[in-house]
Amino acid sequence: MAKNQSASLDRKKFFADPIMVTTIVVLIAFLTLFILYPLAILLVDSFVTDQGIGFSVFRRIMKMSNFRRAITNTLKVGFLVGIASALIGLLFAYVEVYVKLKTRFMEGLFKVVSMLPVVSPPFVLSLSMIMLFGKAGIITRFLLHIYDNNVYGFWGIAIVQTLTFFPVCYMMMRGLLKNIDPSLEEAARDMGATRWKVFMTVTLPLILPGLGNAFLVTFIESIADFANPMIIGGSYDTLATTIYLQITGAYDKEGASAMAVVLLGITLLMFIVQKYYLEAKSTATLSGKASRQRMLIEDRSVTIPLTILCSLLAIFVVMMYICVPFGAMFKTWGYDFHLTTKWFKQVFTKYKGLKAFKDSFVLSLVASPITALLSMIISYLVVKRKFKAKGFIEAVSMLAMAVPGTVLGIGYIRGFSAGVFRTGFLQGLYGTGAILVIVFIVRSLPTGTRSGISALRQIDKSIEESAYDMGADSLTVFMTVTLPLIKDSFLSGLVTAFVRSITAISAIILLVTPQYLLITVQINEFAEKGAYGIACAFASILIIITYSAVLLMNLVIKYFGTSRNYREE
Image (cartoon, rainbow, N blue to C red; front, side):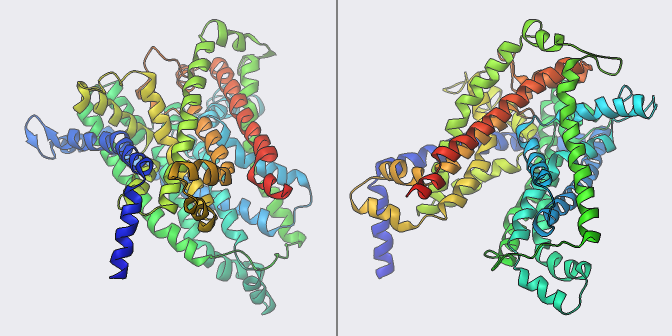
């Protein structure tokens, strides 16, 4: 009886706050309209034809040899990249957490390697791979005198994706290894076990769910990747590129929708396993922090080989990124290595670079604060409030993480140019800058939401409850109490959304119209044509913009962040 009265009181209190109710309704409408609706339209397109409801479209695409080949290719690349990225990430994390590094240079190198993929466009390493190991590559042609090296295809995609995604695994594994209690491993050492035996029997079983989690995250990223296979894949088709070519080359919207549903099905299945099984299992296995500081390995027979291996890999990755600005400064890559500024000049004179940077910058700048604020609002509702639609809001906002960009792009084309909204209040949305901003928001929402949820779970309920007791409404409490306490997460989400938006390619390449020029689309176009000088010039300026945004965020957090305020108090 008391429980029912308490629930009834909570409901009355909840509905007595119109701002809260309005916010929830608007959020549900936004998530339904711009995440669920485009995916639902894809399902309708795939199953409903002129002949009625059925599997005829799926049967048709399954007869296509290029589609069957694309599925096989995608899964092969995904598994190899997932395994390689997880193992390399584990190696880097183990060296950082367990091995005593002799110099600060190594620590700095690890930080650079972990940050570079975040701030660079997704296809930079594909450009570098072609310029270093292609037929006119510096290493293959000029150092090794190999004139017919083919860098395109399976191995090209696999290497580039592994180098792009392993830092994500490294960051995940580093957190897991830091949380292992050293006393567990030291007890095994005291009983005479070798370091290898300790690693295999104690450390590995503890981090195995986390390692599986890292594998699945990378697998999802790999099979959803569009940019790298498009540039370095050559004739090696993957599902993402096949879907793109099916709608842009064959003009087969129904077939493309069915292919998109197949790709979505694979990523969703992996996402559910990763999110609701492995992630939970990993958290349960490693709960809390290490009870005391770990004694770092100083044995030279261990430290020297591991440090050399990680250093070589890290230096190779950095070299790949450095290759891009040099590609923009050489007259003709592979033939004439005299320095020039002509490519940078042509970016702004011949190829409308100023418009491309302006359009990309403005659209990303509009999307990033909206994304950051929405992420914090969703995080606040999920962690701090109780209402029936809470599970729906959390699940749908996270769903975008599992939806490949190409799939989302096709969903928006079908949903807003030929779906329910061919006429009506959203008829003017397709082909505008607004739809690009919405895509940016949807793609970055899960990252900001996860960060916000982690930050909010560390805030004591009593801080906000005291504000409510003094008569403040939800908006006042959120703006004056909650948001200032999580402003580090808000600022981080703001910059992450900006960087992800300005470097996005897979979803927007299908939605961008001649009215808008976007940097990533330009880079992709010139890279496909083999105009590497122009592509590298665009990419170099883009890296400078994104890196500057991250440095600015770090400065703002350092001088105005929550941690500084606490120190001053």
